Image (cartoon, rainbow, N blue to C red):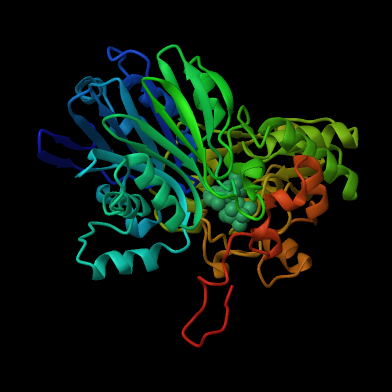
Length: 485
Ligand code: AMP
Ligand code: SF4
């Protein structure tokens, strides 16, 4: 039976599963069907599959059939949570969905999204990707006014702010809520009359609008719209509130932020290569980053390989610009999840080999340039370099398709603590020795910006520069009143 959290006619059944998994950014989608007869549960399910790379720890769908809203959510991958039976029960022509990133401590079904509540506006469901900077402050206010909250989730908070807004109409209530919240978000809210979708005023989180035969949809990434056979209309603008209903779609604007701040890490790693973010295709941007990197850094190698799979696109661009052969040097077994091993060095080495195996004939005796998108905690590159040396690589030169990741992300991407970032407080030489490379080269910030092709003052680069474009100082003040980042 699939893990789930089922709410139907006021009954609540909780079925749980707790698989472990990697971390990534969350994804949201929403579909409003053209005809009341449309069945959106399957479309939401397939759309969430397309967004699976953005979050593997939980998934959920809420549908509306004209009378009732139904919710099914659980921990794990999309196919762990949904099956034919529960999808058949999710009747309706409109729906929203979410795939979730979570820290270990909060990997529990109650924190998975969407959230579904009853309010004076009727049934309301919400799902969100991002992080509110003033979430704790707003939570405190609600709690002192007597609100009860089940979780720390920003979505639950947002639903309460909407429900308590005192506005006559739901669009006015959502607009008022958007004025209260600050931070990075892509938000979808489903009501009995409409689907509302909003993107933060900085445009930090991606969100696209598309047309489907069955109506209209929004999704964190354009690949979800394309995968459902839809047509991408455009990206939702920073600070835009869209309303999708029987009449089609219409748009409202919040007062804009002083600047845009699209998350540059979307182009480095988060987004699927077939998505367009900020008008740029993620695969082509990654190839361009690889080309810039080859222009900036010294290259003394016989062969270029990409770390599977995130390093492959920049490695292709790198090899092209360096005039070197690109090869598949390591094979990743896509079917291995978490491996249970005894904690000995030999067992750990075997666990890595089950997931990644080198192509010895490509590597033996060669000077290998290995390209990866980023070094975060440093464990992946260390393991990869050991693997390449074990396979007979004569030299291993590491090229990183993003600048040193030294500052925590406060806008919802993991890790949010500086101590976990291996590049923080280390010199390039120390890092090179730590991962065991013969040389280590990062792309410059200017090179990254050039490759993305979006002006620097419209991007968030905070995890590389420490300059936070979205009001951080007010929110990271410790007891002594000083700012700490
Ligand atoms: P590590 O340095 O061991 O943390 O692993 C870095 C690798 O994890 C990168 O090459 C990416 O493939 C992937 N990655 C990058 N950013 C993240 C992130 N925020 N969360 C999880 N994985 C990431
Ligand atoms: Fe993206 Fe880095 Fe900015 Fe976070 S700090 S939003 S990961 S660019």
